[in-house]
Image 1 (tube, rainbow, N blue to C red):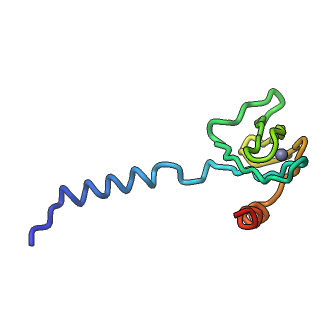
Image 2: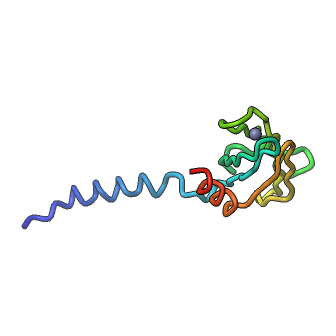
Image 3: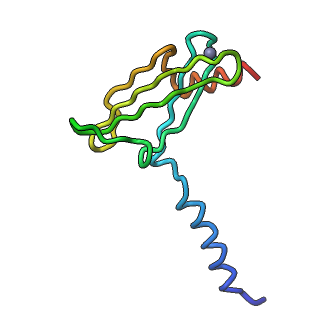
Length: 111
Ligand SMILES: [Zn+2]
């Protein structure tokens, strides 16, 4: 049996493509519930690209979440981070923040 080293390298290279991709390290997930219809919404934040620097230091992100089922309410989310991109504060209008667990539970109930 001949071991094809070229092929091994090719697969290693393929694997590296995936592992070097979205590892989740720079991802921050926002889970929220619409106050009007109760729909749960999640959205991904890229901590590397979505953050805007603030004059007073740190970063800020503005996101508008919109459900796609029952209503067209827009949830305005504001997140502030420190220089190390650690979440400091978050506010939401027309909705409330929920945890990932709550989100999962709601998904199960709806299907
Ligand atoms: Zn809604």
